[in-house]
Amino acid sequence: MKVDIGIFYRYATDNKYNEDIFFSEKINSETKVGETIQEIFHLKGEKKTDSIQDTFSKLLEDKDFFIQQIEKNNEYMRYLDSRELTLEDLITYMNLIADLNSKIMDGSFYLSALIIFLLMYLLSGFRIELYLIAGVLYIFTNLSTFTSGIFANIFFYPMHWISHLMGQDYTFEEYAMYIEFLPTIKEAFLSFIIFDTVVLAWRESWKKRKSKKITKIYYSIDEIINVLNKLEVSNGQPPHIRVSKIKVDFYYLYKFTRKKKKDSALREVKRLTVMLLYKDKSNSILTTEALNFLLRLKQELSNSTIFKEEIDQHYKFDMEKTKQNIF
Image (cartoon, rainbow, N blue to C red; front, side):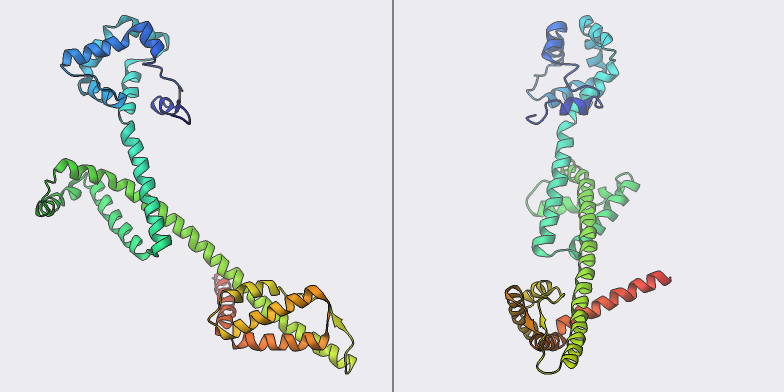
């Protein structure tokens, strides 16, 4: 109501009106429809409730009687005619408002269930377990739908027996209420599965990009070593050529090694990379110094099992891509 007071009116009128077209204070002052409603409750021997939803629900319990009393209010009937509204429109509006609590509850229950599933997935790592529960729930709800509720009702007596052992009186109305929430939970599971599928696809893409980048860095170092070896041979000893910049993404290599603290070879690679990044910012270095550094760096990378696995992963992705293109 604080965001937009017309939300509920548009919902109940199929987005035709953003105001109370049937029972506003202005309409009540012109047609006295409020007194008619009060009279209906009086004739039924009931009290009018404060909730609009409950009021409309009680009025529609005997729809024919309600229509008969409304038709006696000539001013209100003339008002409906002036707005090209019918009693059928009025009944539809009241039914939707009466069902408003249920709609909001369904939405809240769906959102709560989805948040719980995501928290279980992100914080506790429950993924296979959630998929298994979702599968069982899908089978249960689909069988219940296909049999018009017969399959779901089979489980009432076992649930009633269990509740009796726990000292509770589990009624069929309560059981039916819980069963009505199952499609909402099923939709929450479906949303979780979509979310999980997107995350898996993103992770797969990220792994491919990472392995490709690592492979490029490794073989770029190899190429630069070959170039520096040729320079040393052609310039004799000692070489006088200095290297101001090496076109290898050492910063990415540093970020990769920073997270692999258990690998001793990558810890040394991290130390060497930090040294090179510091020198690269200060001044140029001799080709001999650059060559020795890169040779040592390549040796440490070759000794790392984790680094080799990244390169193997890259070739695995390439093989899979080649097979897909062939077939």
